[in-house]
Image (cartoon, rainbow, N blue to C red; front, side, top):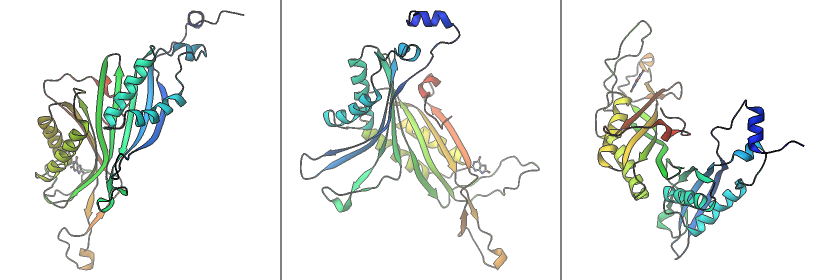
Length: 306
Ligand SMILES: O=c1[nH]c(=O)c2[nH]c(=O)[nH]c2[nH]1
């Protein structure tokens, strides 16, 4: 029988080595009810926990001594929902990061992510709710040693304005058919993520504020293009929230084409549109505080943004 240590294996094969790895339990859907009084409240989160650290022998040798089971990670999510409560998705994920990195020496970090679904009271009822948030809130905590990165956001916030948007001045070549317009519908599903430069923050209040700024900005200017609108949203968020250094947007341009009613001798002064679902423009941008160095590694694992 040959020796079965990691060194022997590495020395023996020499052709490969273990590089990046992480593992855990994905999509633990936890609903936390607060029922300390007759007026209940809820938080509804879908949580993914993944650990990083020294898991070399699990991969190279089949030695599970360091492998905190994904089943244990799942149970921890539910236990912490009771023990810590869910003050905010970000705070909850930071609590998971603390738990795993302080209880297992070889866990040096990880990635904890959540989506949150928003509920409101039905007619201000004490314990009956309806799913009310149009958007899905997102949060990611990445811990690497003593460095934490917290990235928050949302997706699927659909907005539309019926005027104060146009698209002119673009280059025309032999393939260009799009007519210029100074009065069109602008519609998109906003997906955004922003990176905090601190963990000392009221995440729920800041989330609310960022969403308000984004919505307000959508309304408050004449849009020369979706690019122009996204940039202004980003600029206002960064100007208003000193704890945010960087924000990304990924937004479809949901085209609304004026329907041709002339064929039926009917006038159509920007009143009847065909809402086409595809293809769609796809406009993405990252906007950062001017004097802050960016590190693309902060965004590893966050798909769908540039
Ligand atoms: O806001 C827009 N940005 C574009 O880049 C573009 N391209 C296009 O055909 N329509 C639009 N609208």
